[in-house]
Image 1: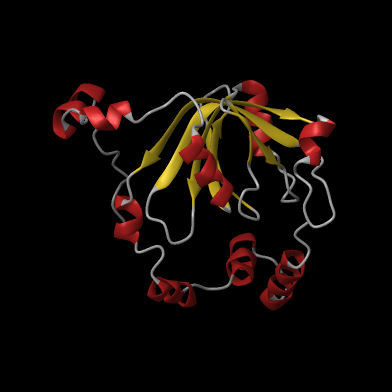
Image 2: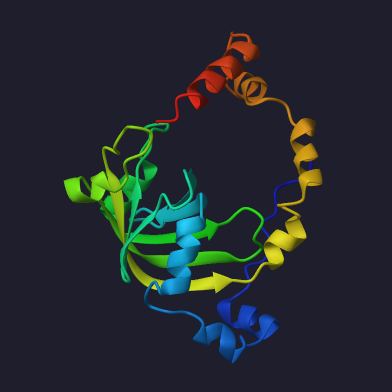
Amino acid sequence: MHASVRPRRVSPAEVRARLGAPDALVEAKVLDRVDEYFRRFIAHSPFLTLATADAAGRADCSPRGDYPGFVKVLDEHTLAMPDRPGNKIADTFRNLAENDGIGMCFLIPGMRETLRVNGSAYATDEPDVLARMHTEGREAELALVIEVAEAYFHCGRALVRSRLWDPASQALADEMPTVGEMTTAQLNLAIDPKDLDAGLEEAYQTLY
């Protein structure tokens, strides 16, 4: 086995020299608010990725999803997103208590371009905000309030390269073991992987 070798670190100056300067249009497209087009994109988006970091800079990125428009635009500088039942680890809430910076990437199925939103965020239990998160007969216990500093459309190169919306790409999932099989092997659990998979499927039936 070869000894682990850390690749050479490239400086920011070297990175810029390799990449060159961005086009003026790329820099100009970054807005400090949610305009009508961003608002419409958010209203049609059922999925996003959300990135935060703790006080030491340790980063975390998690997927969030619900019905299209589950993230609400409160005004041109403020968004609100419900906290739905999950694994209860609460990485995002813990990070935001130490470092309020947040980054979001909204996707719409079938659309190549994405919407990126950066800013700061905090948790709220404000009744008026939670009332807007009402879904399937239940309200959220908490919500994130996002104060928008930057918003802009990101080009679709990554989604084109990945063929993310190509139905043929879904066949890749068939080549993977089930989550139950992987988890029981990783944790050396003395249970039938099928039981774990069945438990996950049951949980998926009760999303709210």
